[in-house]
Length: 367
Ligand code: SF4
Ligand code: SF4
Image 1 (cartoon, protein in one colour):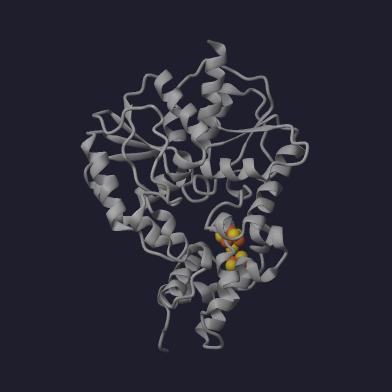
Image 2 (cartoon, helix red, strand yellow):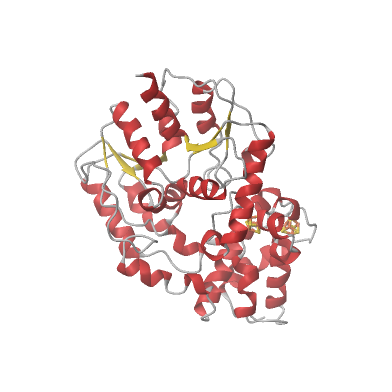
């Protein structure tokens, strides 16, 4: 049978493997906040099967269903048939863009990243009062959200690296551009080139990223393979910090939110917890944790395109922190930080921090 769309060429067998069992419904954050079955993984797979059968076409009417997905991978994690829904959705979005049916919020996003260095189209990054592009053992790569929206946690993380006497440098970084693939475009090769050249120029052997999504992009996207080939390691800040002893403790009740990009997408669950156990004897898990963690609602372009639902998802997550009477919610992702902080519950008693930010504040207080 003639195939019209790339998603069908690449994922036909996967779409057909969906047995409609519905296990994905209970774990889909978009379904949890909208209660619309067409938005969960099963609904999306049924729709794409209709497209493959020629009963409907990809067009503007499908935008709502296909773009209401945070690519959190909860469905994939729980699918007995192993259907990789987030990858299928990302390819279907590329097919949509190719026929001119992109979500209006993301129209021209690839053009923005041709003219600017970041997803917010801002040209003056916070300088973080640190020298950039110098020779160092490590590069600290902040990411767009940490550079332009969550600069306070970033400053605290840099403060911690200074306190630990780490030989690091910032670079004139540009967006890793992985996010383009989430909303229907291809990774921008010019941006990739700039990042690779600037990292190599420092002579660093390791890149530490503040953002789990950047870490994922550098490690998994073939466009960044040159880093591996030149022997450069890329790790997330939680992997870097786990071996340090901070000699400070909090008596507050602390919980941890697993970012989807760090947990389900990279399998990094224990490193952040190792750090937290060192500093917080009263560490308690939320009801959903590790691979079952609830998504904060920010990913896959949902924060930009469906802000109300995105905040509703973040509130569901915060309610779990409230349930266990947490006083501090830690995470290690500026995107999660941003969404969870914006969601704020009524009469919320806990504060939200990145782990590195929280550790630095504890160390500062102890001085
Ligand atoms: S869990 Fe998997 S097989 Fe079951 S309905 Fe969802 S996508 Fe289909
Ligand atoms: S990736 Fe997450 S948001 Fe998207 S369909 Fe699966 S469970 Fe729902």
